[in-house]
Length: 338
Length: 155
Image (cartoon, rainbow over all chains, first blue to last red; front, top):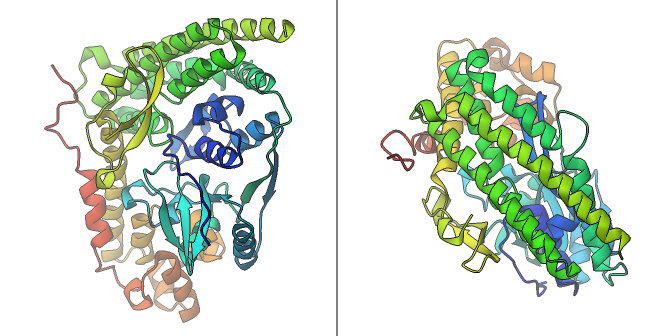
């Protein structure tokens, strides 16, 4: 069993899967578009939630939301299923493949042997597309890899039933009906609008307020945690921002590309300016990561102290505040003028 | 980020590449393959150094009879009691008990098998401090990939 499925090397797993599955069903959609319509951009700093003793920082919305929102806004019908029994989960997968349906699967990346061991963490919301089976081997299009890969049945079962936080429980999903009923303009506007809202939430942990909150915390890390722990916190921040999946700058560049495409879809040149502004903000995030990593290496001088790092972050937060305020205004205008 | 600024520092695994979004000469966004960024590699290597430290500590604890060999495997696989318990299908208090060397020494075979399956090793290897050091060597390699000597674009 071997479907014709076009593998696309993407920056992020979930937006990559969304773009791949929809394109397969005749709705060409780039990764950035899937990410933008699905309102993937977000920020949250949750120091009371710990991942391996380090505070949780995220640059994206809750896992699963990009696919769910992008498809619903485009009027595409999807089906999803979770399982208790691994045998049933594999049987369902096999049946879908027999019907010529490529299937999105949520997996624990730690248990996928085709990844180099150095990239395998206990992370349970990695998305892949299974598009075929040959005997005991499954053909897999993993968006963050350059080429399609193969995975043994036993290993796939393990990955689909990984335990721990956000366990996949065999979660699979696929596109049931792909005629997009909704207008793409509306979908794009809805995507942007929601991103503006969540980035401006009136809670200090989320959105631009979250970034400014993090900045204030970073300023005090060295005194509060000691050098060793403080650098570990910094390292974790860099990894969350840049590790495989963000396309650079904590998804800011991917979002900027989305705005560029949105400018064409909506025939609204002003969005081009917003795209350029977002690129500049992303560059600032990259500056932060580079400076922070010098600090991690113990090579930082005065110009890379925690106070300076905090200033860069604060700058990111402030710029995003203005950015989303202005963008929201523009979107409101476009919605009214439709 | 401009297309020409997409880092090609290496540091990904097996010569892999990842996608970065960057702007080309005409200000249009393009997808560009990156061979890795040093800033990120530094952070990754720092992460592996903490894992390395934990494994080292666990080996010492086991050699001195403070904890059972289970602890070493947990450290090697970056698992805490909660995660191991859910993978082995046991309660957390059971795993905590099995970390005591005296309890572990008398563990029933079916329980040993559960752990062996999680860590993908034969049972007779599980009961000793592991001597298959492949994974351990690997973690050490990762941890010291970006030790001092590299530049990080220093003046």
